[in-house]
Picture 1 (cartoon, rainbow, N blue to C red):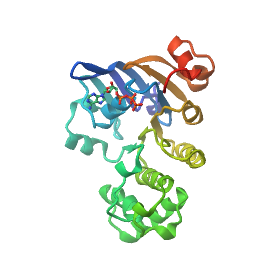
Picture 2: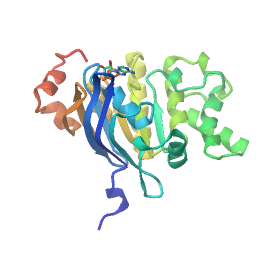
Picture 3: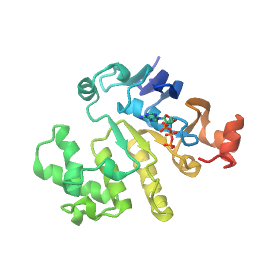
Picture 4: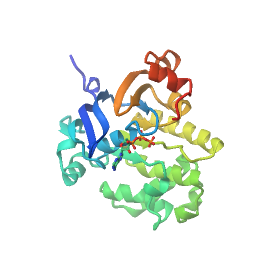
Length: 261
Ligand SMILES: Nc1ncnc2c1ncn2[C@@H]1O[C@H](COP(=O)(O)OP(=O)(O)OP(=O)(O)O)[C@@H](O)[C@H]1O
């Protein structure tokens, strides 16, 4: 008998994306299960961000299917529906953490507003509840809740990134896409943020697709890795297996840091 958790949350089939004559993704296929963290690694230009964009709906695939299992158990092809239909079917089930927090935050409203807005979009109306949830989430991402009314422009880069994470996770999505979430931060800030992401992902049982240049980040967060080269998946497997015993010559080069990643 198949239980509901045996079903993948996301299944990508035959996904390709061309920009004019340039092929950014070629015949990509994989599945992702609830609670699983999939790292996507590869050199610059290998198609990682394009793949993430096709799943997020920022980029329209040239070919292929992106099946997502909605909360009512039906599968919807995200590559074939309009933005409005996507919002209606998915609700807040998919989050996106940008490398630059300014791309994922509203800088014209307060920190608390940034967390409260998705709750209101999800239908929550009671101001006191929204405010107390925003304060709780600020604490959860290690921002002093007394800064709830401050504008995030006044936050450091690391704080802005933690706020972006809170804004994405407060509605408990089942899938979060992360594009280099710790890129551009100081090493010590990065390490704390990685710990925080690891803890939240485990606590909330989130499925995550994590695009990263950094194999150390992938090793720490990802259960499974997918290695991309020139728009294709060249190797995939459990993270430790791929990093400790890479089979493909390209992955061997990547792991030995010969490639400019
Ligand atoms: N909007 C676009 N128009 C034209 N070409 C694009 C566009 N977006 C991406 N590409 C091309 O698609 C290929 C894959 O780019 P993509 O950004 O997905 O790679 P990446 O692996 O994420 O690289 P990086 O790690 O540097 O962000 C590249 O050759 C890139 O120039």
